[in-house]
Amino acid sequence: MDEIIKVENLTHTYGEGTPFCRSAVEHMDFAVRRGELLGLIGHTGSGKSTLIQHLNGLLKPTEGRVLLDGKDIWAEPKKIRDVRFRVGLVFQYPEYQLFEETVYKDIAFGPANMGLRGEELDRRIREAARFAGLDEGLLDKSPFALSGGQKRRVAIAGVIAMEPEVLVLDEPSAGLDPRGREELLEHIRAYHRERGNTVVLVSHSMEEIARYADRIVVLAHGRALMDGTPREVFSRAAELVRAGLDVPQTTRIAMELQKRGLPIDPAVYTVEELARALLALKKGGGRGC
Amino acid sequence: MLKDITLGQYFPGNTLAHRLDPRTKLLAVVCYIVAIFSCHSAWAYGAAALTLIVSARVSKVGAKALLRGLRPVLFIIAFTAVLNLFYTPGEVLWTWWVLRITREGARTAVAMMARITLLITGTFLLTYTTSPIRLTDGLESLLNPLKKLRVPVHELAMMMSIALRFIPTLIEETDKIMSAQKARGADFESGSLLRRAKALIPLLVPLFISAFRRADELATAMECRCYHGGEGRTKLHVLRFAARDYLVLAFYVALAAAIIVLD
Ligand SMILES: Nc1ncnc2c1ncn2[C@@H]1O[C@H](COP(=O)(O)OP(=O)(O)OP(=O)(O)O)[C@@H](O)[C@H]1O
Ligand SMILES: [Mg+2]
Image 1 (cartoon, protein in one colour):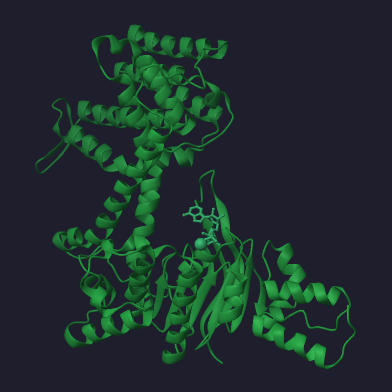
Image 2: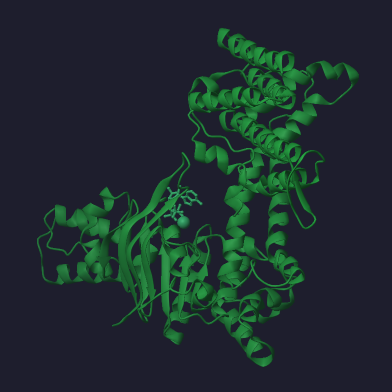
């Protein structure tokens, strides 16, 4: 698979020249492959938000480069707006960015900035609303009359409507109830499958990332600590715990069982997988405990 | 861009300047301003500048941070300097077309620049080394006599401390909303004046909404803790002068007096 975004030796220092100067990202290398759903995970303050704001040129690297389709996005600083249309970024708590009179108009803001008008604009707005799980009936309402979860969907639709090649979501499920979380993530997964577009999902919930991502990059203290499939990452559970991260509950159960002498692979990370592994053990007539 | 606004920004530390009573620093700044406006000769400006440099050294505030505060007013400094340079009558040094520089004009321009620079960096040193809470505490205590004249000193101080407290928050929020709208292709930096003003709507609407929400939350939180104005309210940290306060104050009073009398 080819790499759509490549980050080379990226360092970002906030507040240079003040007493508050600190590096949020240090010498980071990582890549986003075309068409994948990449999970980005790390403890609070590990630099996730800082990193992803480099992907669409909102932040400028203190050191290092960001390549989009092999081209340095800062090669032509005047064209940085085009990069923002190609890499769509949904911020953490995006519901605070809504400003229009109606949901419809707010979703239109991004694509209208791209110069779209008329039918194409309308099509994109309706399609984005569907992908984000918004009812048609909500489109004429004021965004300020919606619930928090609905507002967030409006904000996500506003970015999807730009039809970016890469959709980056910063903790889209933070602060939602379990049902709202699941619904939202299912919508994102459906968007990913239907469109075949690249999606980068930032989260600090291991369960979430384990269920949805094809590949996981683990950040710790501004560096990329691990990079691999969920199975590969969760097989290094002890390291994850040391990096201040949790492992999915299923992985934890499997680890405990293994510690007690059962021949089970501790890298199982979904309930279904664990169930299958346990059934196989039972059938195989393994030792009881 | 927004990061240049350092007004009301406090750099925590534990230097002599940080430990001083806020009233001392406020009065010292007043003395310093009086001194600057009484300066005429070069030695007086030198003394004022030296005092500032030493104070900055003591408070461990870097020159870079201090000068950064000047950036927003650079235009005003340049403007006054140019006005003074060309429009002061006196002994002509140089003319070209309608422009004319006089000896007096050059002198005033330089003096003006020095004055504004010292004034601004001096006051910035105060806000850099004093937390907003302590600053308003000091102000309230200094203005207390005005209560007799029915001036709502406590309310004013509270309003000021809330405003100061929320400046960095609002700047941060503005930055965040701006980034979010830029991610959707908003363009704040180019186009005609009208277009640029229009481009501010996606920034200002969410900003106002969140400011009102914050104000509401803050009011509720204050009421929940039984806040009912200044009447009968006591302080957790009572301000007290120490020996160092008298010394510093004496120095600044002496500086102002010396410049007024000798210059
Ligand atoms: N605008 C800023 N100015 C100064 N420092 C910042 C700024 N934004 C972030 N930082 C610092 O950079 C570090 C990384 O922050 P970042 O927001 O990237 O973390 P994060 O991984 O997204 O955390 P979270 O999970 O809480 O969202 C933090 O230590 C933070 O204090
Ligand atoms: Mg974050």
